[in-house]
Amino acid sequence: MNSISAISLSGLQAAQTRLNSSAHNIANGQTEGFRRLEVQQQTQADGGVSTQVDRAAAPGEALVTDVVDQLQAKNSFLANLSVFKTNDRMLGALLDAKA
Image (cartoon, rainbow, N blue to C red; front, side, top):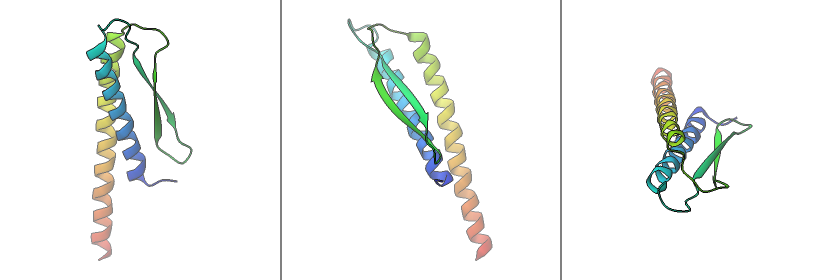
């Protein structure tokens, strides 16, 4: 199993990928023939998450989907950041107690 830091870091990276993709979709949605970026997330057996970015099969925009995805990615980023910070504080407290 990966460390808690590694698991939360993979969540941070996945959320950043989702934010970047949805921002790209919003910025380019009005471009003729534009095919959206779609992010697939998959849990890893040893903890964490991996992402894959693909182009949509057909051109077109989905503004509501992209805005909702940005909000979900933001909340996911903040949750994983909180886990990362808490783990760091706990490790520091354990090291202080051991010394």
